[in-house]
Length: 449
Image 1 (cartoon, helix red, strand yellow):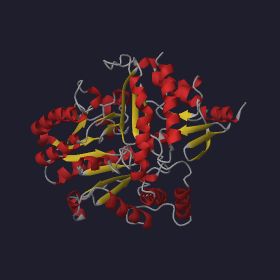
Image 2: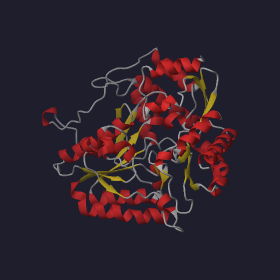
Image 3: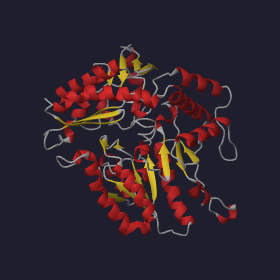
Image 4: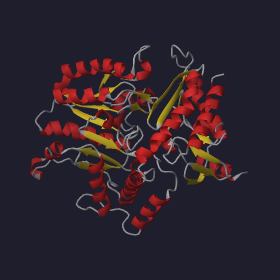
C-alpha cells in the first residue's frame, strides 16, 4: 500500500470534508499533500500538482513563501495571540494602518473576524444596528443580486442566491430582496458588457426607489460573482449603484473576499468603478493563504453612530475569540510587504495578458459558450449548445471529468459546475500558464465528447 493510500484510509476513517459528497471518495481518491513550494503541491508518493486555483483562491504568493514564513516565525517567538477586547498588539495596529492607506479613502475603521462568512455577518449586523441607533428600526432588509454568493453561515446564505448552497436551508434564512444580476454571460447578442450592465441596473434603481425606507443595505460581489460560476460584469454597474445608494439613503456593502488583493487587475475591484462602499469585506488573500482572518472596513460616520456612554447600549458587541490574531496579522503584513516591494499589480499585467492569449483559441471550441476574463481570473464555460449557451444537465458532472483529467496531468483545477476557471497564485510563470490552459482545454475536449 502506498503512502498516499495509507493517509487516505486514515483520513476517511475520521474526517468529513467541506463542500463534498463523501460517497464520491469511494471512486475519487483523496490526495494527501505532504508539502508545498511555490506553484506546486506534492503528495506523499512524490506526485506534483500545479495549483491553478490558489487553493480555493487564498494563496497568492506561492506555497511556503520565504518572506511570509520568516515573518510568522518571528512573530511566533514574540506573541501568538491575545484577546482583542481591552488589549491590543503591534501587528494588528500596523495592519490596520496599512489597510487604511491602501483601501479607498474614507474607510478608516477596521473590525476583524475569523473568515469571510463571519465578515459578511458582521457587516450585515453593523448596517442594521447603525440604522437602529439612528432611530430607523424599519430599515432591516437587504438587497442582493441573483446568482450571488456571500458565504455559508445563516446570515451570509440569506443574502446569497446559489441554490446548491442555500436551498436545503431555506427555512432558516431571512428574506432578502433579490434583483437580477448584471451577469454579462446573459447579455443579448451584439450588446457590450457596459450596455448590458447599464440596462440591468434599471431593476436595482426601481427596487431602491420603491423600497428604500425599509432597506438597510445592498450587498454585491464587485465585478465577479465567483462561486456563482465566475460570472462577470462591467464596473459601470458599481458606479451607478453607489450613486443610487447615496440618493436613497442605503448602505453599500462590497464583498471583496474573493476578488480583493489584485485578482481583478487592481488592488481592489471597486477602484475600477471609483466607488467607495460603506463596508468593504476582505479575507482569503489577506494573509497570503496562510491563516484565517477577515476584516470589515468602514467609515467614521458609521463608527460614530456606536460611540457613546455604555449605559446608552449603542455599542457593537460582536466578537470572535481569535479576532485580530497576531500570527495572522503577521502573515497579512508580510503579504502587503510583497505587494509593495515587488510591485505586484504592475507585474500581474503581462501575466494576465499571457493568460488571455493562451486561452483565446478555446473560444472557438464547439462546446465552449464563453471564455471570459477579469484581471487574473479567467473562466471557460462549457455549453451543450454553444450559440444558445444551453447548459449541460448538472447530473452529468462534466466539470468533475475535467478535474479528474487535470489531476492525472499534474494540474489542480476545481471547476464550478461546467465552468472551468483559472485563478493562479501571482508567482505563476508564462510557461506554467500555458501548461494549465493546455490541460484545461484537453480536459474540456474529453468532458464534452
